[in-house]
Length: 242
Image (cartoon, rainbow, N blue to C red; front, top):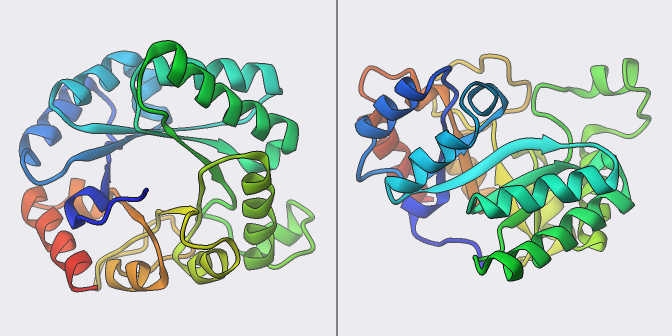
């Protein structure tokens, strides 16, 4: 089941370039943050060592590599992610049902094989950098962003995944359609007054939690803050209020 403690609902993005930078941010957030997202840049630079770094600090890992390939390849990648002991990982829902089913089954089988908790296997629906104009003009998707997000989330649930990643704007729609058991992880979270950077669909922590998000992913508003620990603590207070 999704976490209820505010500390367990905040995921900080380790969007840095080196292992030393990751360690420095972990040091600054020690005792405040319990889960970290490792994305493509850091994992490509450092590999499994960065997962080990986070886990040695007693923290959990959301491996945000958005696997999207043929079913057998994705299944193999998911299996190796479970071997690393990650708490959460994701795949692109647009890979289709066979790929999604392969990912879900690989997560279950690897958990048994390696005797580890089964990682939450999430579907990425529509990236938060996309808006309706880009979705329709460049990707030739006739649905609205909200409609396409819901379609992909339903596809993922049918395939056996645990939840989906979607922006704050689609939380209510997905929650109402897929119920409380469906895990919703929401990036594009910005405290009031923060810049949106390259995100097109954003909301405050309070709004995202009130809409039904289980976990919030926050990067630059914490990592780039003069005092990351204070910034993270303020977001945790906002989660608790919501």
